[in-house]
Image (tube, rainbow, N blue to C red; front, side, top):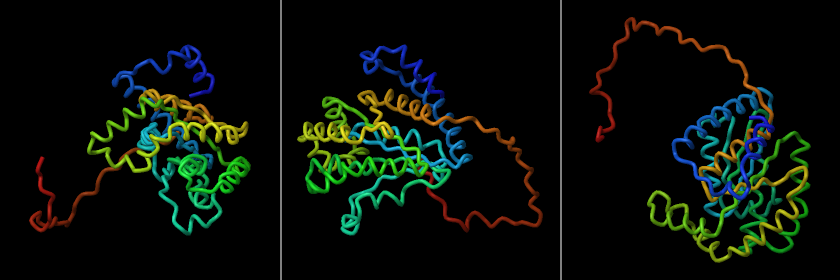
Length: 278
């Protein structure tokens, strides 16, 4: 999707009405399928031209970061599109240069890496929860723009998304996770504590943008109260940022199978099968 086409779509939607429109499931599935086809084309273009792409997904807990990452990656080759979601740093990692634990996950030529949270943990959860000192925080804010400029100069395409969700919507998503046994694991003690520090997180985000929303590496804010719209908008915007073309491929023709001459299949009774309960 070209930038001009993307801008034309946005131009026809009044800003104050964008968050209020609803998308039914049928339309959502149709548009998502189209975008995922385009993502495959982008993947092949990245691989063919040896591009290096890094996409950061940041935002409050339950803002929808994981959902859009899943929709981007589910139709792509995991050897080309890699998802990185790092856990709590070890004692050894805590003693390293702060950005060091993220560097090994940066892409090689022909790869795209999606960070489900990134080095911006220091400007968010670590700052609010006092997991870092004031000096460590100040050093991060001072050096982060330089680090990102260094990545860009090295040839990496760096894209940063902030998923913005309202207090009311986040509360509703927390409640749904409590009631859903398949989503309860998503609620960590840290998530629950974050509810009490809504204002602190808002202040931390504003301060982070003040230092790191630069001309070379801007933040793109995704209104995320409507999950379906947030996914479609984010994916279409991502496609607009990297100029790509559809590559021609030779048509795949399946050759005929060879005849089973002299092959005797072992009896099925020698194998252990999964019980067919369903």
